[in-house]
Length: 336
Ligand SMILES: [Fe+2]
Ligand SMILES: [Fe+2]
Image (cartoon, rainbow, N blue to C red; front, side, top):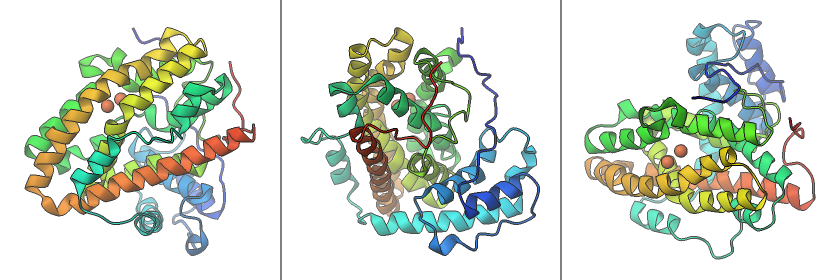
């Protein structure tokens, strides 16, 4: 039985603007303008709050949509035009800030080696993180995990043969292997409730910074462009190949902090599941994909490196804030 409090068809409320770009996109969503004015785009921080929220607002209609916004805005030419302009700036920044490469095997090997310096949010939480820091981490992650596996589902029609079959097998697990109660998004929602957080879809959208939105926006961008299918596979591989040890550290953090079984279950499930998914992605998806389409190798590497870059930016933000004993969120969350 599903025990989370939120309706699984619940929509996100429209967020508050964060600058001229998001203000303009929100005006289109509200039906107040028939085109977005993105004149400030050349001066915008490609990873910043304003651009990333604007991009999030362009993508959300492809998922559950916003409460009070008509469903057909998903294909509103004004929104699609704005999305394209924002994506070009974001993608250009990511390509400029990552070193190009095409050796996928070397990239995968590097992902499988845990860094010795043990820096990172899961290391901190396992060692000596506090409950409020754990809650903040979960709030950041909720932007993805409450729609876990959805951005990667966009790539399915853009694949063929063995790579497609294996990717769908991984996605099947993410969606609970036929059991809605075991969908990873549902396990995550249940964890939020156990930790005293709201599991309502989009409840923390105004709380999370651009660095959090950028990680999910990257998945959405790669999923929605056939041209970027290699990068989407790289992004998915990065997650699946690194998730198991990080999930184990989060289980240990939760046990140390006395969290209940509903909180622990989400990461506990990923310790084992992602150890299996790692193999499925490497041998079932990457190998046949690159055998059939070797020209995708550089974009697979781009997807891995861009995801790592965005993950490091977010991790630095959390750890730097916590070191100063301040919140990593735009506004601290209330705990129920
Ligand atoms: Fe998962
Ligand atoms: Fe997985």
